[in-house]
Image 1: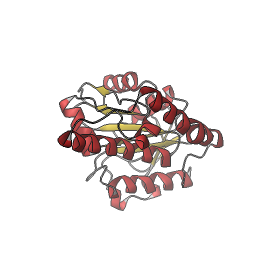
Image 2: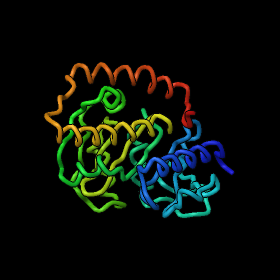
Image 3: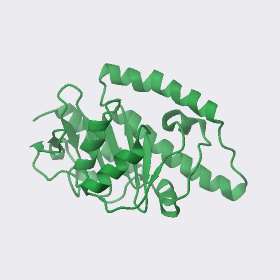
Image 4: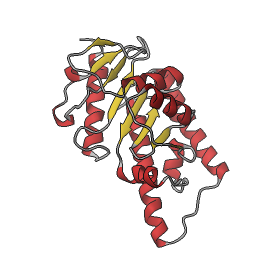
Length: 225
């Protein structure tokens, strides 16, 4: 079996997505690229996260062609591979349906960075892509163009997507996005949330990139601990 360790790590973090309620039922998808071979491990379409095994993970190349796997890969595979072809600074793509962040994509309202922990890995305001049917080449292009160099993007009337150097950092970013959206929504009910200054956000994110992102990328540690 190709890339057994990476496939097992994709399963582990897919289950963490489910257990932490970033996804429900068969929602979402997750991929990780092997830096050495360039091959990508991705969750299968309609996967039951609770029953998922390493053998269920599909291996594709950067053009979304199946290299090994007994199941059909996620319908969002062309989007994952397009993101990874455009972003050589990351190796993982995670699509979730985290409720608070997704809610901002329903009302199309920005939420500023108000938590230092979120600013660390997100950097600044998360862009929102306008609604478009997912699973199409047009949607993939829209997401890639809207994402740019950001660490996360909200899909209008759908869900969210985060990217990262390895699975552990990507999972942390997904939680940072949801935590920030949740706290901001609660804070607005109490009073007026105070946004972190732009220079402070830049300083925090620079620390994250230099001490976590670049180090992990240099070490080719896709799985994480």
